[in-house]
Length: 532
Image (cartoon, rainbow, N blue to C red):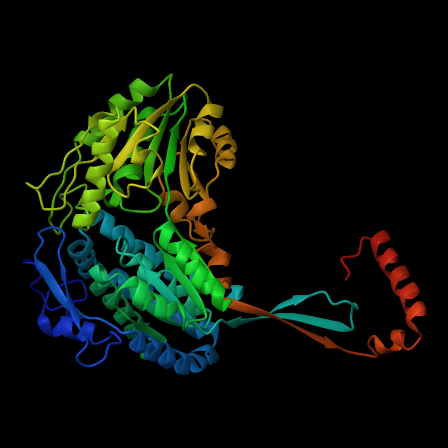
């Protein structure tokens, strides 16, 4: 498929990715699937041409993959966190060294522009390095004050959950395949991944890099197939499930995990809003808003689908913003000539078309875009800006998940915040203002898991030391940072008592014990002691 991918990727780590049949067979052999399993053919969004034929896992194949992972996990957990961290650093190095091949795969499988494909490479590298450097300390034993100072030694121990399941979507096939897996592995878990079949080669190439870096084969397994069947079987077998996808499916995942009393991390949909305040740097805000709205053709959960403009600057901002939107270049090249790529599927294109057509039929005005571009490729749709979208229109509240943004005007900061919060979701938001202190105050008023001030989503998403996730219908739990690894562990408290212990006190009789213990508590309060 890649006509410039002529170098041998095995001997040249910076070579682009070639669709060599032997190489594809080697990758697909990593899928847990029985001999004679049914197969599915994937296609390239850029052209509609077939890419690869992939095996489909059965529920029995899923259970077998989890069983192998469970058998391999104790030996992996027995290694020190520092030794696992060294493997993550090798993942960092390999991902950067093979970036050209990985970007090719991401583009070919999900149709995004090359710069947006590189964001995935960078994201995996940043996560691998951060968890390698910080993860061992986060899962290390922690001493706590005991109930009897000096005599009760209390230690908090972090045990791996066991086997973590990762159900990853098609829109960020590299990032969402292994960025959650990295902290899970560092914590001592095995991982079984179910990527979306449409972008499975990228996920398989990523897991191949994990193994090359030193992760044992069965500690990083892969299954493929239909979500309700294969994903459901995975949830029924693992000890924690990570899911990224729609809110509707996330609710099903949560219910299934809850029935087994296993944990679930869910990053779900969003109807994210960006606010441009009256004092914003309009050129900077316009440039950032283009990236916020149209990166990966709007097919990312943190993309802005609502643009709230203070009425004092709305027209001046739109002059700057619309000019930049109309200059965006659409293209299919495996290079940096295009600013925006394709939608991933005919279903996604149909949804975008339906949302725009419905909004226009109900009174919206198209300020830019508004049409498909089959002259570029079968699944291309122009970056689209709408104004006057009726509350009755589907795209007023529903997530479009495409290159469409709706403009609203507000007369004050308070009105703008009210508009931003008028949604069932709460994933991401942006505020643009020259007064960064005021911007931070406004950000705290927005009901969203992450809010960037004077930057697009990269500021919050890329700051991996801090948690990232959604509120309301946008999910449960957090990825990144301390919370992003501790979710994959079970805390255990071990208290070791030295000396006579409480038996001496109880031996005096219950009444005497209560009097003495109450006096001790009162003394600790007066002395401002952190005990117990």
